[in-house]
Picture 1 (cartoon, rainbow, N blue to C red):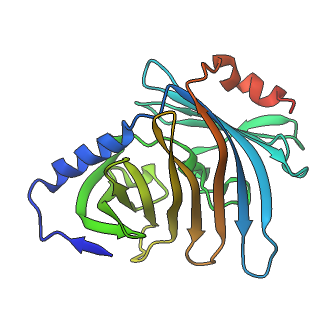
Picture 2: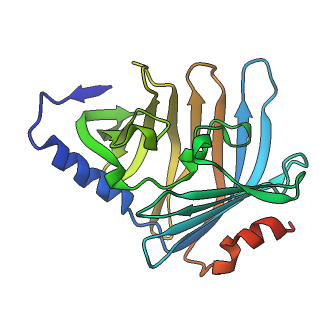
Length: 249
């Protein structure tokens, strides 16, 4: 449910301000988490995967993230390394044990599904505030929780697989509790993220249970964080391309 605002003044300024607060939300200098992913689709048994994620913020406004699967056997050791830059295109590399090498993800593949999930490669990257136009659409609720609805549209249409994103922001925690993703030429969202549970850990509000749904096929990807620790002084070498390929779980 959204209570649309009747042409509010300064909508762009307010939208940019909210988007900036969300982007700058405190989340520690680094983090490590243990989680599981569940893929479900009609007519098939759920597929369960276990993984670790590592993230670190750098001094120059860059950030790096590593995602590594540990179970089951058919995906074990598969990893994704992401370098996020504030002023140029991000870089991603995927390590596939069957090939025993890491390969770069081309920008043209950012709309590809990551290991068969409903997460696109783009979803696993940071997105700078100034890459989008932001506008507050009004107020809304997610499971009875009051939110501010924020529309974000790419400044450069070629810079995103999405034509726009509409986010329901919980202003107390600055977490999006729902995000609808649109593609060019579509009046309705093609994908939806819904947060099922948040928790305050080490003073940081954290999403610990969420689901992404392909609204056409009904395919779902649920992510549940079983444990997370912030500010662990993770070493830079953990986020190297060499470590991505040489990992031994």
